[in-house]
Length: 270
Image: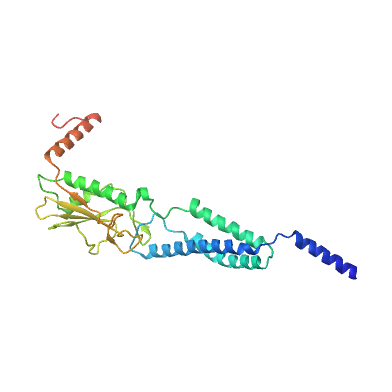
């Protein structure tokens, strides 16, 4: 009987000797990885909640809840189990599973999930300013003599065909720009006055000789209430509108005539 007991103990010791055991020093990398993934999950879910409830946000994409909620639910308990096994120098498999999960989450965040933010080389401000310059050029070209157009119909024509604004409202992408006309201005608009995000504000001087375009965005924030658009330095994004000169008008008409000739049409008066 004693011999059988000693033999069973010897077999168990051999099995334990062959068992891959966790090490106590692995507690530190487990804690670091758990902290990184916990921060990512919490920040992404908070950003998602803010974007879905805010009247204005400047995000390329909304963080997917179907990915980050399971990550948040699984990572915490698995990290605790891995730490316990590491402290007790137990089976290393829970620790290895935690490492694999962490690697998959980080890989997905970097390479798989859509980018949430606009890159520095193509920010929302640059996208907005280019659209504003196109609208300003159209308004200038529709001037009659030295007087800019001040009616809503012409202003709406100036934004037709522009790429949609890089903003979201309640998490939804905006289908296109809006424009609001303000008369009797002495400078660009600096107040939202209840306008929704994605609105160009066209302020016209009393004599219609000068105008200014500003836009309602997020005020340089990722998520928040609608605010006047700001550039990277914090200044108001403004594009001035002036009546197109006679030379510019003739150049525009000649260019249009040549384009019609190239398309097989005829010049005016032909």
